[in-house]
Length: 434
Image (cartoon, rainbow, N blue to C red; front, side, top):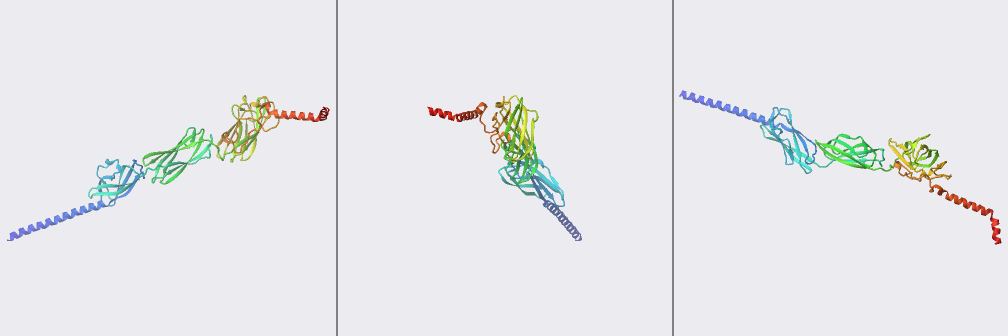
């Protein structure tokens, strides 16, 4: 009897020990599972960046998702992905292995994606699986916008003048919701030089604009095209704006008008004198008078420097030259404006009618030998007629001997009148006898 009681006691003790061990194992397993769950729960998405900030339709870019483990143990992560019908991940197979994020550490996933049209917002979902506690999800919003940046010529001169430096301003406008970068502006035009030849702007924030200044010098009328390249993310885009360059009269420019011109011939040398009046608004600085080909300046005044000629002011000039062909003698007026831009006006004289006359040949004169020279335009830059310009050499319309017909006729009438007056008694007596 005692032997049976001892055996039962041993069996009961073994059962008690087994239950205790089982409870201990169960507690340890539950504790481990709870620890893993708590660690995974402390992994969270802490930042999302997109480059570009706003996508063009079908444009590729990068979405970077950063996770932070604020727990006390590392967590295994796998199979990161962006889930959307309109956002396509281009580097899906980049993460084929398990990645571990340590306690207090961060881990970033960069997705190369392409966004589909239309314009608007695409709602996507970032997902990543944890080793011991399911999948982590985080919502994403991708914006798609097809709006182009704008390039506008915001400032131009009243008129372009051949060979003159003119200021042109180009305004770049970014109406998009995201920044653009690496903006390059290259102006191109036949017969047109531009400084600077290329302008670079590192970035332009959303909903902002920037002004860019250029100095344009045109030798001929042409189209000046500003080619604009820029990056939205890693993708390059282009736009352009065309500025027609045509020559005209600058309303604010100096206008040099020539009058009271006189020509004196001595052998093969000629001497031109006259007056120049600035009928424009601006001053003509460094004004110089000379002759152009086929004439050649010589003698005392091959060039005549007047200097600064203020608006509404006038000055005289004198140029000496030689030329074998007097059919077209260019009188060249050159000056600078207040910005240092060069202006030049050529007024062409036809002096063939003065050949063979030994004395002075003057415009606006009543003396014998007066001639009116044709072929000389008046006024401002480029030979244009200046404001309020009058005839350059006076109003005489005669040429050669025909110019003296009125004088000859008047002389004859005067002689006849004198003769009739002195012979009036004799004539009267003759009439009475008849």
